[in-house]
Structure formats: structure tokens, C-alpha cells
Length: 224
Image 1 (cartoon, rainbow, N blue to C red):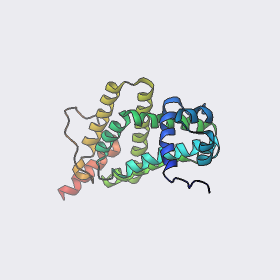
Image 2: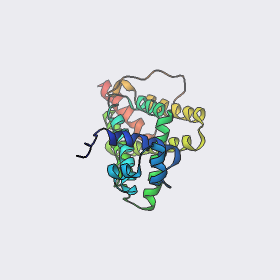
Image 3: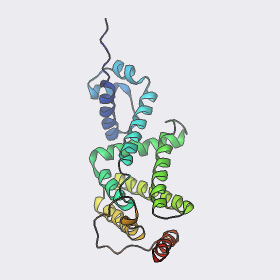
Image 4: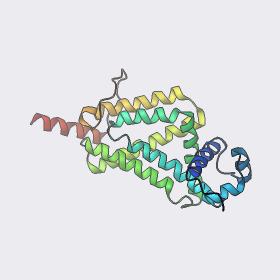
């Protein structure tokens, strides 16, 4: 009789593959060097994942699902608190490897739309939906919440890409804190579902018009 499949083997391999590809990139993936680096046979990779394209698809889906699970656990955070927390996660070496995979996959998917079954696009959509709900809970109108969520998500993605290109943690961390400060001032954590983040000394940047209107609306409701 053949050996029984080990249900834990595939997730274990997937984690090792993500670490490997996060260091070397996914564009020039070849199964033989990958198998050699992991100490397994190419047969084992094909058995668990199928073709190279199927393996890449599972890697990208795994990376995006890990971020979704992480985001889902932050629903009690204020928006600014979640931003700070996500940036700290982005700085970890293991997280940077995952981000490299995401950005490279996004470029590949742009050249061949649908290559990764919309995993990249759906993660962006999930971020915008998640942030939009947080803005709505803070009293921002639906249309403005979507705009603010889109702007914030795009800004964070840009900061992460800058981090991967330059590694300048100090400059980028200062920019993240400036953005978080603006959010603290515009949307106090006491009026959101999460706890207030630690106070900071930086002067907040001016609020966009939609956030100013939300603040006036809240003040008007309290005055009544």
C-alpha cells in the first residue's frame, strides 16, 4: 500500500515556498531549483500543487488570505490605530517577503488580467470595504467614506512599495505617523469602535472637506 497523504504537509510546503519566493521573486520561478532549495523532489511539488502556474496561484492566494485574516482581527481598532499596527507588521522581515510577492503578482496580473483569479484585486476591494465601513461608523457619508478609504488604501500601498524599494524605515515611519495623526484629529477614536491610540505630539494635518463636515455634524448632534 502507498503511504497515506500527510494533511499538514502542503501547508508546511506553502509556507516554505512563500519564504523562498519572497526572497527571490516569482517571475523566474522554476520548479527544479525550488525543490532543491526546499529539500524535496519536483514530484512532491507537482503532487501537492500541480503545475507551476497552479503553484503560483496558490502562493498568491495564500499571501492574500493571510492579510485578510489579519485585517479581520482588527475590527475593534480605530482607523489610526489599525494603520499604525499594519505599518509595524509591514516592517517585519517575514511581512516584507509577503509584500514582495503581492506587488510582483500585481504587476504580472496587470500584464495578464485574471492570472491569479482576481486574488490581488479582491484584496484591494476588501481593504476599501473594511476602511469604508470604519469611516461610515465614524459619521462620514457613504460617498466620502469610499473616497477616503480608497485614498488611504492607495497611500498605504504606496508607502509599502517605497519601503521595499528603499528600506528607509525612518522617513516612511514619520510619514505614516503624520497620516495617523491626521486621522486621530479628524476621527477621534472615542467616536469609533476601537480604543483611542496613544497620544502623539505631532500637529495634525488639515482635514479634507468631507471629514470636516463629519466632525461638524457630530458636534451639532452633541449640541442638541
